[in-house]
Length: 111
Image (cartoon, rainbow, N blue to C red; front, side, top):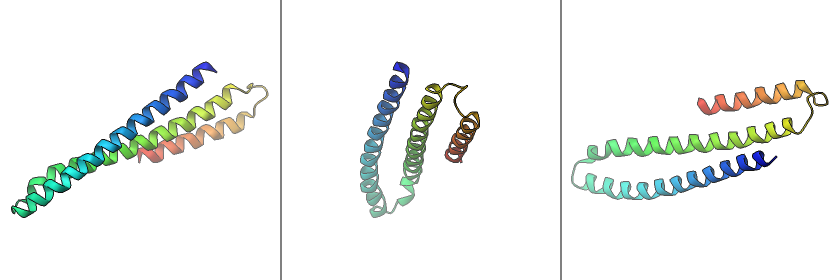
């Protein structure tokens, strides 16, 4: 049980770090918009294309990692339920179905 608490705290810690990354991203986005306006004003909008792509990639990565941490938290909850029930008393079929659902969830994140 103590390790389950530790795992949940690890997930929460990493989710907070990810929120920090999202905030940094927002700051970069503001800077990018300012610089993009300058590039357009000076007739060089293509100058910012690489930065635009990098910001989009970063946004996608943050969103994917966020979805992954939500899924990990869900998995830990399911596994905790499994560990708290005796295999002899528990419904093995339900456990198998729960694992299948978790697999589908991770496949959806993977794309």
